[in-house]
Image 1 (spheres, rainbow, N blue to C red):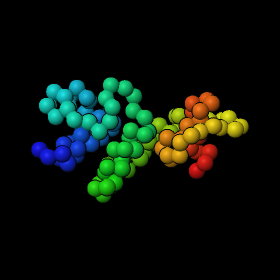
Image 2: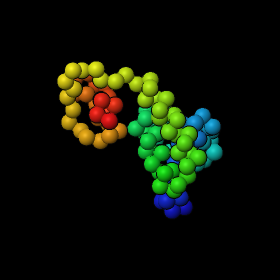
Image 3: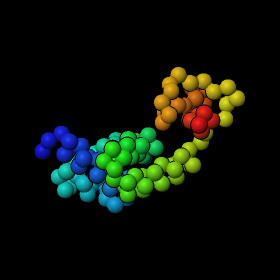
Image 4: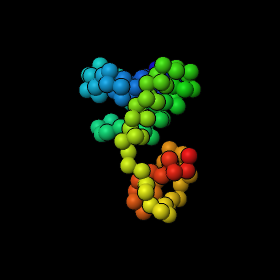
Length: 110
C-alpha cells in the first residue's frame, strides 16, 4: 500500500470510530489499525476538523455532514471564554484559546 492509501484507511477508520460505527478495538483486531486522530481519549473538535478537511478534499460530503454535526454538538458543550480581556497568542480559527482561563475564544471573534 502507498502512503495515500494508508492515509485514506486511517481517515475512514477515524470516521467510523468518531461516528460510533466501530470501536478502536474492532479496527485493531481487523489488522488495519491506522487512525487519523489520537486514540485512547475523548475526541475534540480540532481532531474531528482534521478528519473533516480530509473528506472535504475528496468531496465526500456525506461524511462531512456527519462530522460537522458532531463538531457542532461538541462546540455547544464546550465552555467559552468569558474574560473581559482575553489573552491569546495564536490565530488559528480552530485553536484560539484564552491564556488566562484556558477556554476557547473563537466564537468571540467570529
